[in-house]
Length: 342
Image (cartoon, one colour):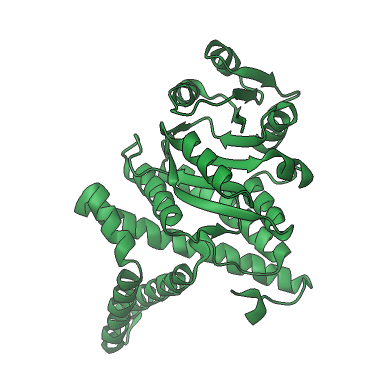
């Protein structure tokens, strides 16, 4: 089985060097490494060539990671395409584990792993984002309905038959590909044991911007196009219940503040009880996640991460409901009722 590793990059900097060095240190070496330079203005192309990769350059770039990955897939010679982001460093056994799964399960056409729980960036936003990703991928359904190209592999024949990544999607093109593969009757496997280190340093601004504009909005549009709400990853029932608790917590908090300012103050106690009940329910639903935050970052980080998690649930669900209402008002197809929810 030949493994062709494809790394799309735009101004990869030091991260690209570490990415390629990680691949070179793998216990199962890739049969070829293709770096697709998507309009970089730094030395990404030269760095990739110096480290032994085959370097392609997109025309009139940058044209986005979907286009870059498709370019790499066109020239790849392996039966399996392994997609690795330029800011991701594979573990020594990542490629070997991918190969084992695909060899042992010939009916599985694609698989993906997740980030490990030891990111180098330790500020609260980075630690929260990476640990949440790790936790979700460790606890997701092994029979996946999506795909992830940060650290994922797909059989080249199935990839080409599906038409590759849809370049009209500026983000979430990997999830969209996974949905098409599943609709074609193929199996996709989530493999928690397949892990890699994410080098990216997040700020609150970049986290919120990415979560809203590159995750929540396109993912909601994909759900509306598909016409059903899956239970994959962070769309499971516990996440939905947690979102309701987050809104109850926010509503009760605003009510307490309003009653304290404008009265009648005697009702503030009932609203405060609502805060306690909402917070307790949220903690109970996510006890394992918050305990994981505590183990990896201590008490102070766990409190910060819990607050960031509540915020994440609020803006993600707000985007979903807003786009769903907009879809309905514009005369979109019937709602996602019982048959739409697993």
